[in-house]
Image 1 (tube, rainbow, N blue to C red):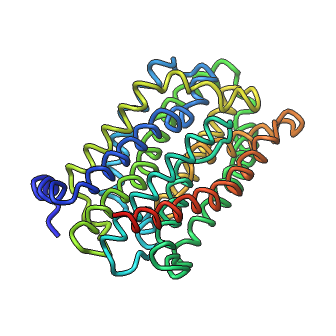
Image 2: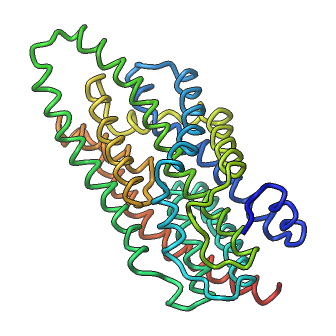
Amino acid sequence: MSLTLSAFIEQAIANPVLIIILLLVLGVTAISGVTDAPNAIATVVSTRCMPPNVAIAVAAVFNLVGLIGMTYISTAVAHTMFGMVNFGTDTHAALLAVLAGMVAAIAWGIFCWFMGIPASKSHMLIAGVTGGAIACSGIAGVVPAEWAKVIYGMVFSLVAGFVLGWAVVKIVEKLFARVSRAKANGFFTIFQDICAVCLSFLHGAQDGQKFMSIALLGIALSFGNTEPSADGFPLWLMIICSLAISAGTAIGGKRIIKNVAMDMVSLSKYQGASANISTVTTLLVSSLTGMPVSTSHCSTSAIMGVGAAKNPKNVNWSTAKSMVFAWILTFPCCGLIGFVLSKIFIMLF
């Protein structure tokens, strides 16, 4: 399968569904940049370690760098996205099912936004594509060994983020107990700025690679291949997806950046740094082990852990309940939409 840009254009002209899939992928990737990327740097803004405009610029640049950079380092998340579903041997039906999965993810995302449900776009994408695979191959459309990594990722992002947040802030408090507040704040301001770069990089690595893998899956199916290689991401695809996520962050991020930290618990600089260390660790481990996770959920869990270490009563525990509620709703509902749309698309086209 040739993955040059010219070969893609030639194939897209012959198979217009491929163009639609790519446009939907770029749209969802840009929306991720608008909504999720700012949450990754919310603590550095809420603790006044970095001005909002500077933080947004940092997020935009390093989302781009993260998507491209991590793809050269590890494609473990992409391997999970490819391996968790089996569309069968009918590549035309599979291509329509991928399209249906993307439409389902977007439709469910609009519904969740309207209803105020904090659902992850990554989970919507996984659910929609899985519903499409089941429409093509029945229950065999789900590959348990790989799909389990999605479950592991959900549990890991919540538990590890919380536990690490609680443990790290306790360690930091002991290490800096005799350091003056002025010196500590100066150190943690610089440290959080570094963490903002790392978090932006890892958000691009996680979310960008998930969305980009669906684009590559569509390309592979259009060429008649049922098993795309995650090692075959062409540079042109990486560039346009990274530009989409960065553009979304730069254009809409300032309106969204408000609020993960301040909504749950007020953080000091050392607490913000502790939360960031925990989020960076959680995202890095997830990316290297192939667990697709939500950046916002990782960040939220870490902040809750830090807040609980200070005083559990100060934490808005309803946030965790909302995340779990979103998980319970998203997978069956979005998966069902993907299944139904796939059946309709295959019947009509």
